[in-house]
Length: 161
Image (cartoon, rainbow, N blue to C red; front, side):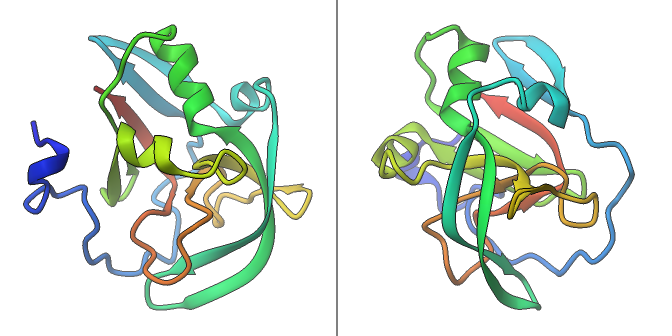
């Protein structure tokens, strides 16, 4: 386990990622794990959470530049974490794509995000559902504008520690 003070060798900390042009599969469900428990989530389940819409967000894609601005709708990552952990303390969360790309966010980083611009598990873009090619469910870090290192599409698993 890697802590925030010593994360330079963590494979889920910002790192290079080759462009992924095609979805790895058509399966849009993903696993959320916490304290030895696992649950499957789908875009339909996420849509039952209170919806958050963030305007002026960008898709930053490795090898494809930046596109947008877009309006993304989804669930705040912290809302999903609060439901899964039932309000108990957590330290970090890893969001990993089906193709192996991922990011690890520490609670201190997530808590430091502006309340009006949280990390978002988005299922809609500009008022319409995301397509599978667009990620179907994707992590949007609305404050990232240039590296594509904290945005994850084709989410396969979320691991809460």
